[in-house]
Image 1 (cartoon, rainbow, N blue to C red):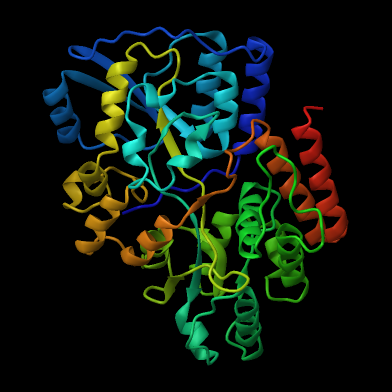
Image 2: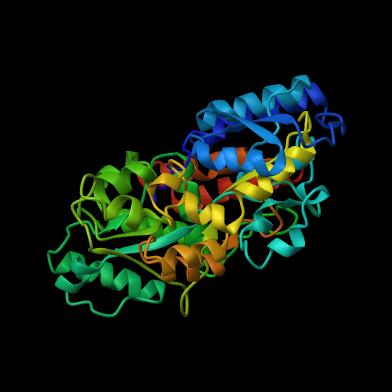
Length: 442
């Protein structure tokens, strides 16, 4: 199984796309509610970031449904631009395409995608797809989770053992003390990986740390919940910046993105832990000899919290049907097929390489994760499944339509606090002010 890289230029792309959408549609919706109900004998276009599933699998789908699939691979950034351009100009682009968790509020507001529950009984999916709630906005489901990306904590157990640590930490106090012990014992001069580059990865790291310190980022109305010094978000920001100042984090991380830290620091044994890592990285990066010097040494641990372990926050991609789709009913049948338990397991390698979908990430269904785990095809599958079952959305009420501006404020201000040009208190106040302004629509 290979985990796809997450996106790091999301903010600029989405901000431009949404600005374009709001300008052309005036917030009144992005397309007609038309589209054919025909399924048999039609060809649908699927625009996606990954290469297509095996030809044999698509041929079998066509044989059973009468629906032919034209698969188009487009990199994530360009795909978002094309989705926005088609929606704002009310022209056909694809019948099936990506719905990112952070765009759900925007897509709902702009009415660019069909509510998927018009076609699929999403209530039956809730127990098997823990991250389905990330795609709900205004009571409507905008997409189905395609993968199960979520933030996890990874530890180099060998380095911890060398420092005399044999029991993994379950609280943030224990976790921080263990990192200090790793440093003091000379096992790693800088044991903690935090990506302080002003990018999306810094924002999501802070979200996970906020959860760990017992806080939330925004309430149901988008109001900031982190302005007070005793809030989880404030404590998380201070912990992150203090970790850099105290030498737990490499000084060079001020310009390191999340993926760079994972590939060049965690995978090379330079650091001993990444608090907010990618689910699946052990099997797809750290245990791969060609890309790692720590094969067999890195493990997932339940994310430390205040008084015990904390929840893991999700950042999955979904799959949905644009309002300009020619064949929405056929598209829905395809979505049901590609997210089915057996197919997800096969695409991730449960039945051998011939059935693998290139770059397919961790399945969104617990039932598919179970198959992979039982077949021994998913590194620490039982642990990942447990973490997935307890994962939560970053925003309980869904990502707000102004998420890009908010995330940009988070990353730029936390980066400035890390550099030392502003204090943590000033950074938090600036982020809170921006959230309040955005929530008020000003």
